Every structure is written in structure tokens, then in C-alpha cells.
Length: 202
Image (cartoon, rainbow, N blue to C red; front, side, top):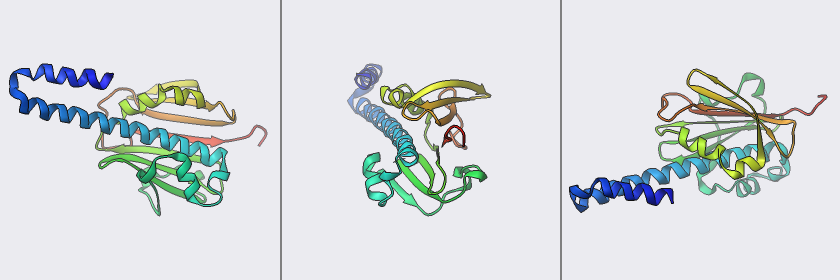
């Protein structure tokens, strides 16, 4: 519905510029919507992978194939041997790490860091695309609300951080930080989600 409205507005605005220009702009709008959807799917998949890795180690204990199948991102997600320092988790979490890259578009995507030794995971996202709208779509989705419950939120500068608790396991918490509005700087990590499982009494 939203896609149809946006495409219709593009045609109306360009009615006086001839069919060639209208078709070109319509294609740009469609391409932008496709990229935005891919970025939303990539983040949703990364967060799902994070949850599965920590709470359901049986999904990866026998190898990466069952894990990747459960995440459901297909060829967009793959294991890599190393990542940039900006995508690394805190020093205390750097034990037995496994790195996954999610290429949502040619110029933007996510990095997932998990561990064989610790019940932690981290997702970072960036690239030459504005991730804020896609992050907002994921957080507002019914699928996300079924899995996570918001417990706190704070804003610092132009970034907002929200703390969530897993509905499946209340000792599994996640803090997700992102830009508070579209159009954020592209020369830095645009979204970071850090999650850890800390059973009470441990």
C-alpha cells in the first residue's frame, strides 16, 4: 500500500516532464524501497541469528548450515574470518568469537559477532545508506514485539538507546542504539545491538 502511494505521487509530480522522466523516477523510487526492505530484512535476520545463537545453541552445534537455514537470509549471510575493529565487541566479549556478515545491499549491511564460549552477541550496521528508517520498521514490527519487550530508553546527542528483555528468557537482555532521526552521518556505525544472557545468581 505504502509503495503504491509513493509511486503514484512520483508520477503525479512528474506528469509535466514526459513519460521517460516519470518512468526513470518511478524506477528510482522502487529501487529505494527495495533497498530499504532488504536493510530491514537484514537487521531482523541479524537479531534473530543473535537470539538463536545464544538461546538455542543446538541450531549451530552441528555446523553452520542448520543455523543459516533457521536464520533465513540465504546467500546474503555468510561467515567471515575477520572484521574491522569498529565492528568488534568490547574487549571482555572477545573470546571464541565467530563473525558473520550480512550484505543487505551492495553498499550497506550488518556484522554479527557471536561466541562459542560466552552467551553474547553483537550486531553493528553501517554503509552508504540511511539505516534509521529500516531500524524503525524492525522495532515497530509485530514480529519484533513478539520476541522482545522494551524496558527502558535514553537519548544522548543524536542517538537513542533502547533496552529490551527477551520474552522467552528474561535473563537475556539487549541494548539497541541507533540514530534518533533519518539522515544520520554515514561515516560511522549507524546501529549497534549488544545482547547477553546473564542468569540470575551467576
